[in-house]
Amino acid sequence: MSDWASDAVDAVCAAVVEDRDLAEPLADLGAARAEAGVGLAGTLQDLAALHAVATGAHDGLVSADPDAVPTALVRTTALGWSDVIARLSVGREVEDPLTGLTTAGYLRTRLHEVYREARAAGRSASEDYVLLTASLDSPADGYPRMMAMVLMADVLRTAFDSGETISLLRSATAAVLTRRNPQLSARCLHARCMIEHRLAADPALHACQEIRFQQEPLPADHNAACDLLASL
Image (cartoon, rainbow, N blue to C red):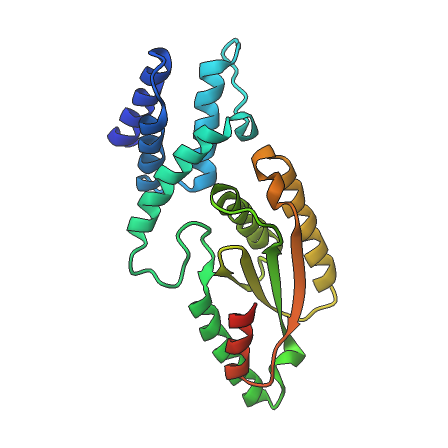
């Protein structure tokens, strides 16, 4: 652990012992873990361990449960982490800094390649590929929606891990460009169940539990596909 990260942990522990406000120390902790290259999930796991040590009665064995950490503490730490990631990601236009998903611009480029491939093979792109969309069908905004999309992105990367392009279209909608195959419907159902299960585990995200999955057939050409992305 770097000196800065170690200092950030010490500052959080000191604030707990002295019963001081944790907002600044936790933001610094999130920032330090981001600087060290730790992902958001790992950072929140570190926070859970600190929370368990500070609040639990234990005999040296600590169970770090991220779901047991108060939402306000998670939010402060996550924002400190995301501020650094956003700064480090300036100029990296192919990846969303918070979710790690590729951008809509990158998806448009991939679609261009797909249409070129189809044309060279004398086929239509829709014969081999389909676009899946996963949306939070709820009015939730701000922190709940941000965290829900982080969870959704993690599930989509797990469920579609065979070379698919997974992109963030807008703040509450992700898209997966994937080849057609007989298992596709089952994979979509599995991903949806995983997302709903993870959202249900956090009371702060209950407003985001309505997930909408759709299969969008690819249009005849790339320009029409770009128009489709803009409408989703």
